[in-house]
Figure 1: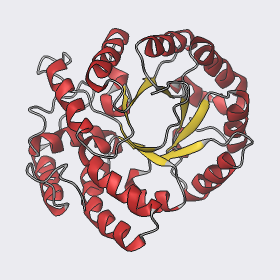
Figure 2: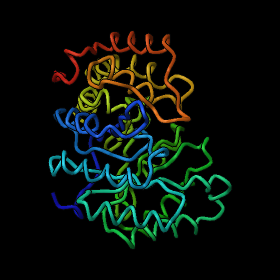
Figure 3: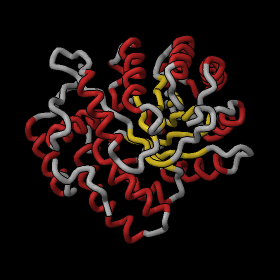
Figure 4: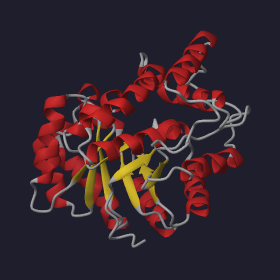
Length: 319
């Protein structure tokens, strides 16, 4: 796979990061989780060091080690997309350079959280941050568009200007949370002289989002239901709305399992789902995240059953 020619599209799960009871990274379980995802026919990449992997709680050395392990397991079978999550533009450049040196195919760039204090009024700060990344690596960039409610999203004109100024931005992971702006961004990114793809991460309304014409999806829920996501994406691409609705009916219980309030528990819940499905031995999360209560774990189990997911049926081909 040519790294520089890689175009982010299709179904890209964001993988989880398993921990031991002492909160150390469980490398053996991580390798198993990656292998599990690779068994899904139709995924085009795996994103690491993202929200699903609790990147906020990973040290820089653990993030680097994750890149190494991922490439050992994944190789060139699908793309490895590495999250660039840091408050420091200097560190962002180092993360990008390391990812390229280790053989990654693309970068997922998060906005520094301090920008919530008014970064939309200082677009030059975002440009500086991206310049440190682009100067350190020529890997394709997937720019993460945060929800409007976060105060970290890029105004539409700023988003388009970033895409014009940085040719390595090849896609936007869109979580804007507003259907009107979501469609506007999708259309205007596609209309650029150098079109930029949209990867939705609106997992709570995935069918509607894909039906607008997204080029793919990048979602933590793919760590559990990548097979269903592939089936849904293919049905939408084929224009088979009846089939897409049928698949979405199976996905919907997982939405209730993962994305009910509080949203910050979504990836904790995905780990619990994998334990219930026999695909992960333990569901440890690093503090300040907390393990769901027994009644919520029971709910997750019920929702997995409603979705038709069991340890025997998961990742069986969805026909």
